[in-house]
Image 1 (cartoon, rainbow, N blue to C red):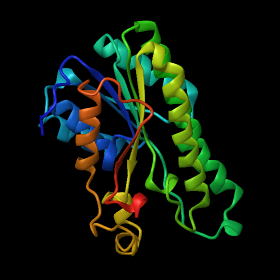
Image 2 (cartoon, rainbow, N blue to C red):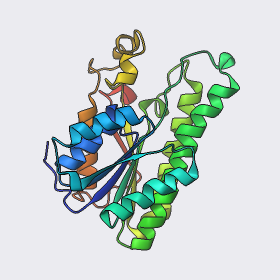
Image 3 (cartoon, rainbow, N blue to C red):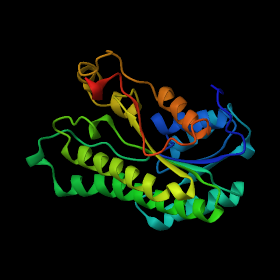
Image 4 (cartoon, one colour):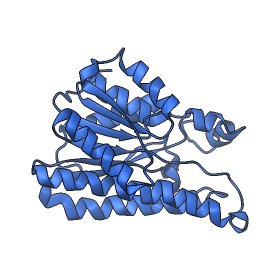
Amino acid sequence: MGTYNLSGKTVLVTGAETGIGRAIALRALADGANIAAAGLNTDLLDETMELARDVGPDERQVALPGDIRDVAQVQKMVDDTVAKFGRLDAVIANAGVMVVRRPFIEVTHEEWHNVMAVNLHGTFHTLQAVTRVLKAQGEGGDLMVTTSSNAVRPSPMASAYTAMKGAIQHMVRALAVELAPDMIRVNAIVPGLTQTPGTLSREGHIERGKKNIPMGEVMMPEEHAALVAFALSGEAPQMTGTDLKIDGRRTSA
């Protein structure tokens, strides 16, 4: 770790308790950024911060418990980040929930509305609150959102999840156009099947998924974190509205 220079940048990462979000927060910290690690599960968020103490100094990190479904809690995350570090340069809107795989006709209203409330509405709340800060600062910035290869190449038995991730990717494209005059870049992180506590907890999920990956291996969270660090580094300042894929060629097979 530590390839890109993120010194002086402040990065808010939602869903930082584990998996891809944790890896992104730790990589950004290692590359010199201030990190605000946000999440709902306080026990897992504490674990992330324990790891962070071995990566960077305490003054460059803060934990922000909160639920992105609640607009007021999201606003508090953003306000607390600015209060701690004096500014905000980027957000990684990574928080989300997985869903039980089941046929479309068996998806319950509760399951549908929950995945939309967390993954879609929560992402909207997060991006809107951060965009207001970036526009007020007038110095540009980065909005990055974790979507999924399912948004590009859908899988069966995942209708709610696929619909939600597709909606997020189109929101990324729309915002990339709207916010370009403000020099705010908006990009989608598009992971293929990635080894996380969530995917490992679903019996047979990794083994089934590997069959659809031409390169034959699942991704690791650190791969996505490295790509995010590059995107935040400013080395490609015109990169916006882009799907940043690491998926073993799943979506192009």
